[in-house]
Image (cartoon, rainbow, N blue to C red; front, side, top):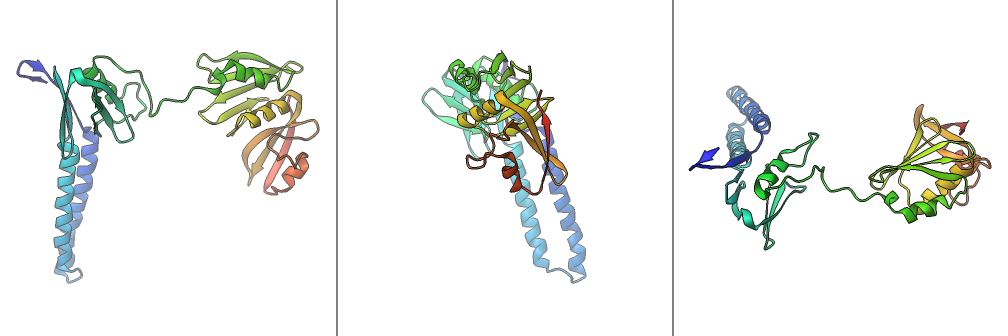
Length: 285
C-alpha cells in the first residue's frame, strides 16, 4: 500500500477467519428468523426473539471489533498496532523485539513497553508464518523459523554426559551423533546390534533391534539402567494390551528389566501384575 508517497505494509486478520465467523453469525440470524414462526404459533415466548436479536447484534459487534478493526501497519519510521480497543504506536528505531507468544505477536521497545497483537500467530505448518514478515518489516531483519517456544538443548550435546553413560557398559560404543545432538547412535560390540536414542525435549525415543521402539520419560538414572540392560541384554519383550501393541522393553539374560522396580528383579514377577498384557520375548541380535 502506498500512502502519501511512502510504502505502508498492513496486516489484518486472515480472510478465512472472518469468513467462518460471518458464516456462523448468518446461521444464528437464520435460526432467529425461523423462530418467528414458533412465536406466531404460540410455541415460543416473544421475549426470546428480543434476547436473540440482542445476542446477534452483540456477536456482530464482536466480529467487527476482533476481526475487522485490528491491524498491524509498518510505516517507514513507525509501527502502528491497532487492537480491538486500544492502539499503540512504536518508533521503528525503538523496537528491540518482535516475537510470537501464546496470545499473539508481541512488540517490545527499548524501555520495556510491550503490546501484543493477536493478528499473527506462530501457527503453522508453513515454512514462513506471517509473523516473520511482520518482524522483518519492523526490525529490518528476518528472524529464523521457529514453532512456539525454542526447543531446549539436547541432553546428548554434553560429551561428558555421553561418556558417563557409555561407562555403564563396556560393551557399548558410540557410532554417530547428529549435528544438533538430537539423535545419538550406539551399538553392542559383541553382536553389532544398533541402538538409537532420540531426544524429544524431555522424552527419549529408544529404537533397537529390528526397529521396535518404546517412548518413555527417562531421567539420567533410568537411561543408565536402560543402557546397562542393552549392553548385556539378550531379549526384547513386546507387550500388547487388548490386542494392541503397547510398547516394548529390554530384558537381560537373567530376566531383569530397567523398567521394573528395584524389588521386582524377575521379568515374570513384574509381568504377573499386568494380566491384561500379552507378552512376547524375542532375541535381540
